[in-house]
Image (tube, rainbow, N blue to C red; front, side, top):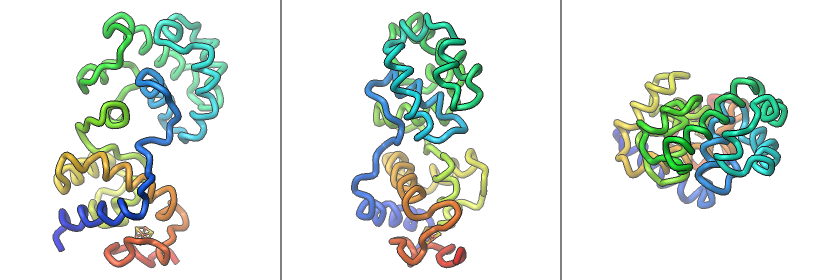
Length: 214
Ligand code: SF4
């Protein structure tokens, strides 16, 4: 089986394995909140962000309110996330830019999204896929990075940009979001960082790393 066919087969199997795999593990109730929590999620777990976001949005529920907030007060709320001064600046400035440049609405173009502070291409890809169902690339987070290399779909261990390019070449565009969503679920539930459950894995017949971890 060539690698493209293998990648598509992996998606087919994982669709049956995780029919409930969510598009994101970051709690949010509108595009504005998704943009902000995605910025906050840099180098921290989604669960950590979910702990502080209810307080943040309870106090500052709109781009207008967060844009006018004192970054020091915002920093106190998001302190458990680390780099809180910088992240407070990012999200208050992003909120002001949303109001001033985009009428308070989250834009749908990659070129617009990456103008916000703290928004990388990867962050923008997450927002575009989760909020708008659009894909301008494959979201390569820590789970997608680890599992993709274990599955032999890329040799570029710990190089997310190169892994993304490999996946974009292997899969048709309409499958980029599904791949990231399903591999994210697989990485969290089965192919975990330290102890992947190879015997219980539905991919163990086609995975070149099956059994290497026992
Ligand atoms: Fe991960 Fe093991 Fe499954 Fe391969 S067989 S995807 S290494 S859990």
